[in-house]
Length: 308
Image (cartoon, rainbow, N blue to C red; front, side, top):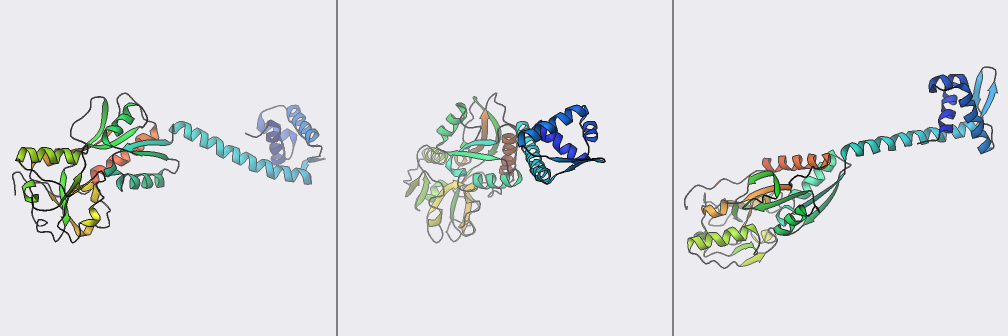
């Protein structure tokens, strides 16, 4: 904020008289005159030339007026920004997600949201599913996005949408034209799958156990997209979510085929916050934006019941 003296000075410069400035400011003319005299004394210069018809800026007064107007505009801008941020609350949106969302989905959401809300700032922590949940429970992150096969009562589910596991392969793969595949179909092909602790691996192991199968994966990684570049022109089948393919450079050369094994469909994408926690308005707006993107994401065909 500019000083009282500068504010009175600008008003006299605008009105051309002390009486006019006093009327505009709703103060006594003596108060305006006193502030102008005090300002001139502190600067050691004459700011106005007193004339019969009013007050006219001196050369020094013209220079000070240019500075004071710029300062007043900047003060108004800063004040407006402070008030706007106060209404928004915290503008840093603290997120956590498992790695499957970190390749493209989450970065694209953040970039597109910032185009709409330039004031938004992001802090994204990518970690294993159990660490993602821990960050929410300890208040380190506001919103978490992860794959799940069961809900946690300590968390508030903001969004829950189906996210089955697909068999992803080259479009020229012998299995690519099938409406569905079963794990038994993968017994003789190289398989890539997530490591222990990922939901894909949990479902894969359960489905193999229920079907009485032992399939030793050829490729294992904690990164769901790590082996996608290997798929075009190969016999490898990757087990992953359809979201992983979104925007992938190899996506056009790949096919995502649903599994007929029911275990491979028992997975969901879950967006969670801490029970009882109220999100700042900007974080809530981003949550709604992200949820809309998730529900609008294209999906591969659903699996039919029964083995193909």
